[in-house]
Image (tube, rainbow, N blue to C red):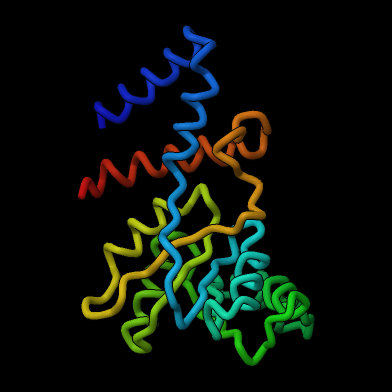
Length: 205
């Protein structure tokens, strides 16, 4: 933990003291979050409900026939959802509606209960599903979440199944080239950097 804290402190000092290196350092820091595996044949494209632009990325890959099925990792209904259902209120699922309008037919989409929908819950849900349905999987995730999500997936992935591939939608708002210039992406980047650092501390290998 001390090494991680010292590393971040050094980055802050360099950025503050040496303006000429600020852009290069911040670009490198933003790039730490991002990872994308080489393209390869897949059976299933997977997305969570948390990434911006993921529906566009999934639909583009589907249209290019990178896979024939889409798996959406969705959080379990909460108390409010259940109460609305009890009262006869139908709320159309935004992700499914968006995918349908982008050309992904409902028959190609499966929704998987991902518990509370966090990184660990959704990774375990996907790993359990693949254990029962061995498949080549590509996960479309937000760029800031890509590296941490891959690390989490690999820790729970079943043996004997092709390892998951990670990619991200080019339509996501986060860009390593200028992520610090927008309050929204700055907040997202710093939040994910903190989580990634903690992931390395708690799971060094």
